[in-house]
Image (cartoon, rainbow, N blue to C red):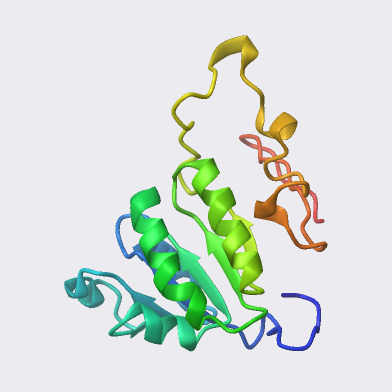
Length: 178
């Protein structure tokens, strides 16, 4: 987003859309709405009243067609798969998808590969952490995210050359500027 590539918006003029206005999506939408132009969509249309000041989209397709940045904050992987299947064909090439659903990392990888096919940049930042997929080893034999390549730039979730890895913040420490 910071680069001035053709078809890419700058952060100052980006239009952001939030999909999923539950307990996590609503405060994220409100916070982003203080600085950016934000539109929202949720399958529960009654949630529009919980986010005054945001533009409400009647459909996910309409929302996606009007965005530079799509933020998904959904209950789980099934909802995420359905939402991106509906949204990706309507997002402009060069759009950014910020995925904040706490879901299955393998599904996120598959969806990131699909995003790449649509020329959509991806940032995976699960709000509640990633649930370990079934069948993945636990304990000493389990590979860490760094060993598996997740989030290191060698993974489809970080598929663009501009992806950088930011170490997690520790309590009571400030992260130096990147």
